[in-house]
Amino acid sequence: MFVKDGLAAASYEFAMAELTYIPQNTVELTNPDDIKNMEKLIDMLEDNDDVQEVYHNWEMPEEE
Image 1: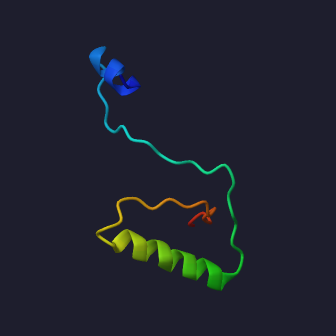
Image 2: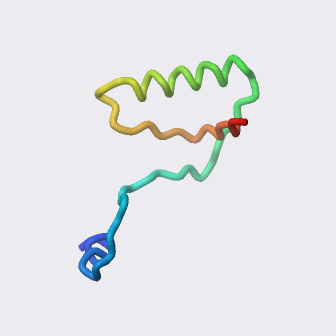
């Protein structure tokens, strides 16, 4: 039995329930070319219909 099933049996409703990977170590990219290439790679993977999820340990810069 999963925790989600037990909570659902107790009348809790969920908007979303899924597993998520959280990296223990992150990598910061400082070179603009590296950042551009990493963004391009992630976009290409996300656009591929055969890829379900994309996980990475890149510490993305905050968007302003």
